[in-house]
Image 1: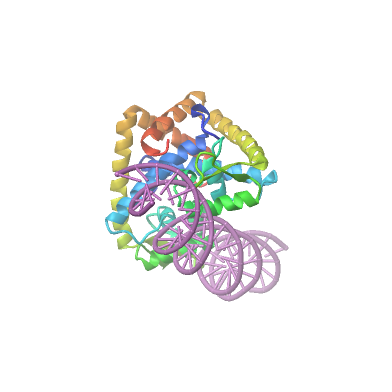
Image 2: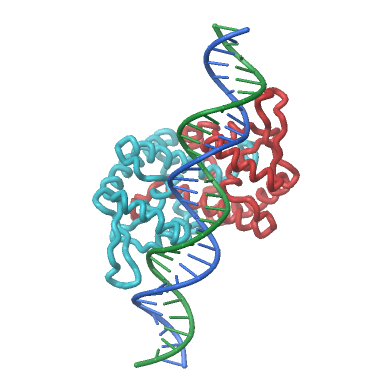
Length: 147
Length: 147
DNA sequence: CGATTAGATCAGAGAAGCTGACGGTATTCC
DNA sequence: GGAATACCGTCAGCTTCTCTGATCTAATCG
């Protein structure tokens, strides 16, 4: 687990760029005024689907308990990023969906991500960038239970 | 940030296999008796260099404050994974290095990681697995300030 | 209908991260 | 050499996040 170049753990190799992407997106969003959202909240928020998501599903996808997800969604709701509406198909459930402020931050985050991906593509070359995404999509088949 | 297959954020794509690798390694270690180490502790412990590391360096590499790193190292020390010794080259500093129990867990974790990487290679093919690592190493050049 | 399952919440606790401030040691600069 | 500065680690206090366990209501199944 030390530092010989070729022997470095593939997990760590995946983590490094992921973390850097996350850090830069959050820093940039904060500087644009979205400074009332945390990393953990963002990880859950990312999973909110277009038509709304159930709390339990969000928890599963983010790999946290539904209680933790509820805690984070409460904060996102207070800050105006999401809203909870009744699920018309199941009276036990409520749907979490993006509120207006949430939709704006989604659009801005997408811009920022696109900019960073462009930087990466410039460094790697378009060929390797495309290969990276293709291989990661295939890897997802065996590593994402909620694909 | 939603779910169209081709548009999925590259950061998320990196995160999925990373998280799965981490989860499996920790689950397997726990089942082998190393159940007194947490994810956060592991993330710092991974960075402890062969000859010992300074707390400040570990914090920088793990991207947490030195106070947080100190907290985690305290726990790792109590559990017998690391020990702190004076730094012979600087009386202000102490070196954190692996204790015997720590060296054993490093060896076992390496085995587990190798097994998972073999699974991934079997799914992707050796060619794509090698490409993945090669591309990630190049990506590290612009995403790891502590490479 | 009654029993079980599923969605969400409440309550309490522990882990882990942060900022700010401090004492001790090195280094740098006059 | 001495003063100013920077660095290493720690203490103190707080917030955020995550967990386990229990509870409530609604849906579903026999």
